[in-house]
Length: 366
Ligand SMILES: NC(=O)c1ccc[n+]([C@@H]2O[C@H](COP(=O)([O-])OP(=O)(O)OC[C@H]3O[C@@H](n4cnc5c(N)ncnc54)[C@H](O)[C@@H]3O)[C@@H](O)[C@H]2O)c1
Ligand SMILES: [Zn+2]
Ligand SMILES: [Zn+2]
Image (cartoon, rainbow, N blue to C red):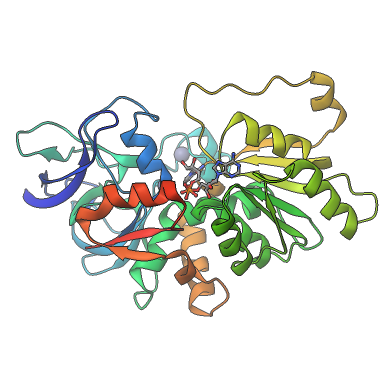
């Protein structure tokens, strides 16, 4: 066992604290990773607000890269010294989804078996089974995806959650390709990643929608061809208009990504979608929210599909090394997502800045 500093949310809504935690030595199938960088994702804030579940205290942070320090018995996939991105989809290889060749939907993903604890022995719930606002963290070895060691940790660590979720929501879940029109509602780290993914796939137009003008500027830098400030104009009408300008007869976008996760944004996505188009919900709704009241005939009459995207339907072993490659080649600007590098004591302030719309990603450097 070793003791390290880490960021913990003790109770619903209370500011997070930096405390000392106990990290067990890795058991069979586990690894301890020395965290180098971990992004602040909106999901961390959801955890501390009690929006995910009530299993306080939480050890936050889940968008990270680091170096494997020590591995437990039987671990062969990674070794001490490997540079890894942590993932929250360590596939089991045995469940029904894995057996039918769709491991990206694995129903039994692995996390560490042992628990990290507070100094008094209270067990911590690690955010998404990772808990990486910590100098070191204990994970299942399958949660470590080895990538090119020369990549910048603060940038590629973001593939561990938000950037992968957004990119994958567009490319994997939404099947965005050349010749498709895309609209993305909500341009935080996740939404802008969906825009970057759509640009990488050659889609056009790519329409960014947000209620915050600062976010729309960032979206343009990352590949949006059009922006809509939905605090000023109706995004459904604007998306329809822009798509019809590009494609004769288009009644909306082929793919609309909701990267906010509220009934009103989902409803906008639903009605801004062309016939036979796809809605991808990647923003995480809180448990109190309900699907908007829609005429069933509108669901039927428009055809197409209404999908949800967990982690961008990614397969870390396939997608992380590939995206790190694109980053190293200069084709995917992950550095642009890193608005600021902060210390472990600055997570609470980063939550406030996230709310104020000042950052795409604050990244804790350890
Ligand atoms: N599905 C997944 O696997 C997955 C993974 C990571 C994050 N998420 C979720 O994705 C969502 C976005 O995360 P993020 O880190 O980008 O958050 P963020 O806070 O950085 O960005 C949210 C953006 O939405 C905008 N917004 C808020 N209300 C809006 C509205 N009514 N209309 C238009 N825009 C609006 C904000 O201005 C902001 O730019 C969160 O719900 C997060 O929990 C999902
Ligand atoms: Zn499985
Ligand atoms: Zn996240």
